[in-house]
Length: 178
Picture 1 (cartoon, rainbow, N blue to C red):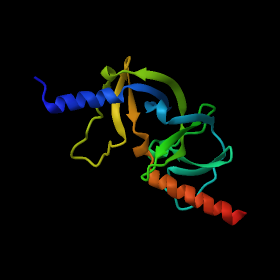
Picture 2: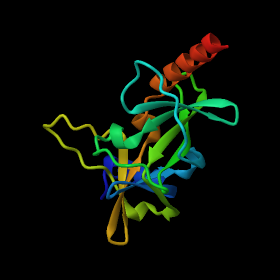
Picture 3: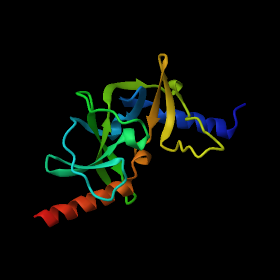
């Protein structure tokens, strides 16, 4: 007979099922909910904002709106790679602590596909107890054919508070240049 925790886990995994945009960083494959994706754009020139985290590359002007951009290779501590014709920016919606949404860009090596991932294909992310490795931003592992795709909680990957601060800094720079 299942206990309450078993039912809770089963419901949690069922909540993770859905459509995901999958992308590559190096040899690894990741997925983010398509509900968070606003668009995919070509790599473009990024204006650096001083005194920000190394993975926050700066901002871009997307049809008149300033969008902060994060490099997931740097965030996940991958080796540096050259920008290729497949490198792109995935523009996603983040939830701010005050309930508002904001857009941010994520630099990835290549977009793969949009796929439906069923609850039966998803397992919880492994925990590395006794180490300093944080897996908070990975909410599941999807088994797709013989591959594993790490499913990301994009709101935890890129701190919404940090994005909001970069937006403020970019606005101040625009005012100073005007």
